[in-house]
Amino acid sequence: MFPSAITPVFFSRLMTHNRYTCPENHLHVSWYDSAWIPLLNQSNVLDYFSERSNPFYDRTCNNEIIKMQRLGVEHLSNMTGLEYILLHVQEPILYVIRKQFRQSPTQVSPLAMYYIIGGIVYQAPDLGSVVNSRLLNTVHNLQSAFEEAQSFSKYNPSKGYWWEFKDKEEKDKPEGKEKRKREEPSSLFQRQRVDLLLGELGKKYPPQFVAPSHPENKEEAAKPEVKQEVKQEKAEDKNSSSSPAANAAMKPPPEKKAKMMR
Image (cartoon, rainbow, N blue to C red; front, side, top):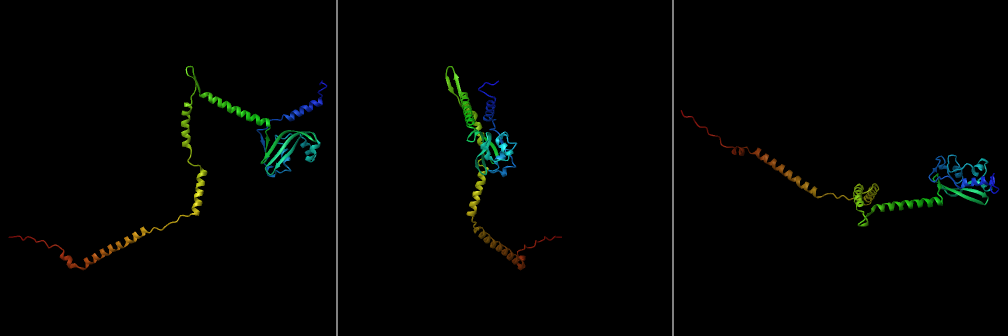
């Protein structure tokens, strides 16, 4: 038997409220339906959120009741219990939905917030989760800093405590050199950007080509010399063919043969 102070009705209401106020942690979960994303708007976003495959949607809410009865969303204010309302709209990309427990037409208790960005549904973290995450990150970073600082401290009974960073610096030096060698002098974006700028400058200020004058003059000067040499050779050939007497005069005298005496 229950005590007089706690009736079965009160106990059931208390368990129901605790179940709503302590929801499952879905901060690392996201959901979407690709068939709905192109059609999302302010009028059908709650229908999109109430899909069966959505893990954020509780099918015991009042929205499901008015959906089966084909009533409007305005009838939610006349009911008590769990419900979902569209709190903020920034079409076509952002929709904010609030999960709340309605106790009366004027009194509600917010339970969770959900936001839809580009058709993907996320659960917004509450203030406690944000503070807890930041504190854990801070403690982890401080612990890592203390451990690294402790690795540099040395102790000797005769000398006492001192800091020694030489081994760490020597280990870091070759790694730094290798990283510098691996680094490229310029990225692909920089090279493409430079080529684009050079192309634009080339279009604005096209290069001017000047016809070379000195080599042509030299070639023209060399051509008549060749002609003259050919003419001289032809003239010499003519002279040699026209004067046979001169050629005979240039021949050596015949050799004298000795006579045999008997």
